[in-house]
Amino acid sequence: MFEFITDEDERGQVGIGTLIVFIAMVLVAAIAAGVLINTAGYLQSKGSATGEEASAQVSNRINIVSAYGNVDTSGSTEVVNYANLTVRQAAGADNINLSKSTIQWIGPDTATTLTYDGTTADAENFTTNSIKGDNADVLVDQSDRIEIVMDAAEITTNGLKAGEEVQLTVTTQYGSKTTYWANVPESLKDKNAVTL
Image (cartoon, rainbow, N blue to C red; front, side, top):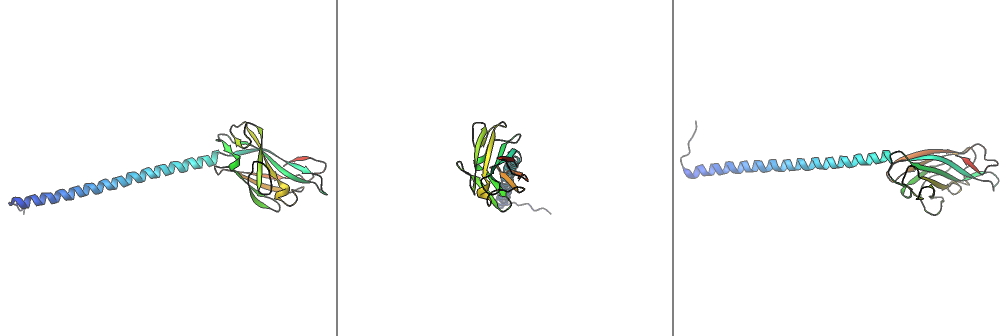
């Protein structure tokens, strides 16, 4: 049943062959383990980054404190020519840079996306003013208040008329969105400003 190899040269060749097969199996196992460890590390870091981004989208939002419009009475009918939002950080939010934010305006006759301009508001841009705090475009503390100014007369045809509404969606640099419906009152007669 068992054969004994008596020739010393043949016995050495069988031992070396077994050793080579064993070393090859160890190398394959080591490479496979390395690939598994690298894949696990990559997936962990990717999952962590995704979690941080999702958390930033949820928590780094703004709250719209109030909204008002300036009424232009110089024409034949009164219209809101500027729409203004007063905003602050939501609870737990990091610094929010409004100069890197966008505002989607969906109004009675226009849909557009406004970007930041530090000097003037027009048909394509909004601007900001500091109400409370040191920055005119960055919300640092929850007590900071910034006014976002949009030129409704430039964005829409001749401004917002009585009874019209606009959907405003502010998207921060983190991707979080805050939507506000600005409703113009039914009457603008004898008013200089109205709550939206």
